[in-house]
Amino acid sequence: MEQLQPVATNSDPLNIIVGNPGLTPSFTNTFNINYRSYKVLTDQFFGFYGHYSFVDNPIVNHINYNSVGQSVSQYFNLPGHATTNFYGGANFGRKFQSLGGINAGIGFNFNGNTSYNYTNDSLNMSKNYVFNPSINLGMFKEKKIQLGFQGGPTYTISQSSLQPNVNNNGWGAQANMDGTIYLPAKFQVGTYSTYQYNAATASFHQSISLPIINLFIIKTFLKNDNLSVEAWENDVFNQNSGITRVAQANQITQTINNTLKRYFMLTINYNFTKMGAGAPKQ
Image (cartoon, rainbow, N blue to C red):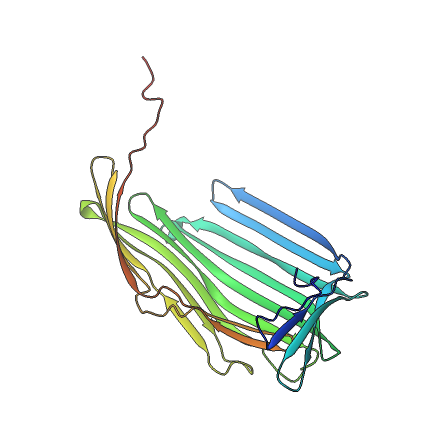
């Protein structure tokens, strides 16, 4: 509605949006491909996927900055240009009995987009690409251990035609780990943790390192483990800052959200479900 509404909204006097009732529809065209293969005897998996879409006659934002610091934005169609978006990747993995039954694999994922906007009557084209190779490790032994790890480096390419000399390319890393170890006396200990790293760039002069470590201990009771008591410590190092960064087009934005940081939680669960059919008659 803010793209069409011809009446300006005055709730934010420094950022004024003026509607354009003369907008015409844009058209999105989408292509997808998926392939999966699994071999039971070797527990081998291979798959790849891809997505590509482009928008004809896209609706783009036109921002004008005046002498008093206000930005006045209005949306227009951009015939003869197309915005694009794509993502894809491939993953391969299998179980290695010689390594104690570990599942190991590699993957490669990527995504990107091309977009347009006007700034003070100058057309800007933005390109953003992210590449992420990764390794995957896993192990499962019933009532003994469950382990999963996925992680690897990332590389981001961010370009703007109006600011070709600003280099926002940069390395990063991401990882996810979850695991449970079963101990005697019906105890379980484990973790569900993530890690994110973003290196400093021309627009953001400080790097980000966010280890979010969550730990738990579980004790089960009764014959079928129907009753459980769980103790959690979330965000052990108190690092959950909720920071997101975007350097796109002519805008550089860092957002810090209020988040739940370190906290403790005690949970008591009782599972009273059972199969309704019961034992078969002799």
